[in-house]
Image (cartoon, rainbow, N blue to C red; front, side):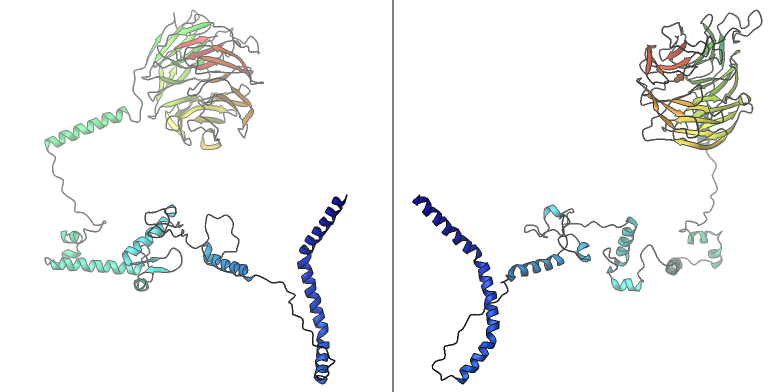
Length: 615
């Protein structure tokens, strides 16, 4: 217990000691304030005591005066830090800003903000610029926003006159006396009076030089037809040149000129305005062109009618037509009845096949020298168009195989279409490789209109809105809508995500367009005023990148179909956009597919294997 008692006493003493030490500055400050008040109170007493002392200095009983040391109530301030801060601020205001620092702790002046950048002096560099700060072999070059024309002007002015404008301000550098004399003109803005003066001086010089030589007659000098005048004015780019009398060609030169002209003419004929000339031939393969009743072989059967309005997806192969020696590029059913099918081959031939009866080739049309690109029937099927890579478009009679008309612009036609209106069956539209859509009147064989807005070869032409408008697609990855007969685009559709669309088909209800996009999908566009993309309908799954596979609809509009690059034919449901069925049709590319107009469950496909298959 005694031990604990003494410990507590010691702890109290220590704590009171630390408390005293902590409170000492406060106590000293209070003591100084108290002493100051006492001094103020004691001042009148001191004066009184002095008077008393002076009066009673001899009194032995008076006590000696009390002297207290004076203390200031203000706390002591260290001026060293303040002086350093002020000096640093002054130094900052005179120093340019470092562009690498992120925070500025003071308000910089205009001069500081626009001062040139100087790196820190380097002890081992000759010019004091560190290696890291150099961006030129001579040191640090500051960036300046100055136009190339302004720079060239000042550069040439300095080299010619010895002065130039200072880019950092409104002053000039260089020879200021010449600057004052020339009134600050540069090499590019010489005043007119100065130009005239220089021309006169130059003229005088030339005259003096001429006078130094042979004496000439003044009349000859002033006569523009004379040689003297020509010699005097020979330096002018507008001076008249004396016509030289052409000497007669030698026999060798004449012979060469004739050969050259002949070669040029042949070259012009080969690759000129017109396509390659080919003799048109046709071969009939049927038994007879007319039956016992005198009906033509192309006449549709009278009993050809649609069984019902509901279409079904085909399941099995019905027939195969083989006759083309190379790939088949397009197929078209005979309009309305579909009892014949027309095919365009890469072997330069066009063939027409029987669908209902024998299933054989009925006629071959030979009139192109290169592969046939596109074919198109007229409304009644009695005539059709072909477009070939030989730059020719030919209008054929289906029954006889005779070529009625041939059209050519000297460019490859990629697509041919007749106006679907019955009263405009003489109007032909062709999308060309030179970015134009050319319109011909087939009766007069004249070009009546050219639609020239695309930036690439034209791939498709599709009539919409009761044939008053047509939509074209091109290699420029855009769709353009035109008013028929007016070469002005009324709607231009081009988005960054769009790809080229080499095939477009119209829905049977004429409200939608299906466009085969080369990013392996089929996009649907409205045919209304705005031609908007229907984002809810998108048909995908097939691989068509790089191939112009034809897209098509079933006659009732319930199914969408397309070939692909792997030889398959794909069927999608129009409402759900889901894949309904795929058929492996061809070896290689399945380029074309057509739904039969009357037999709702039958489809024809063609491929690059040279076969046409009926499913």
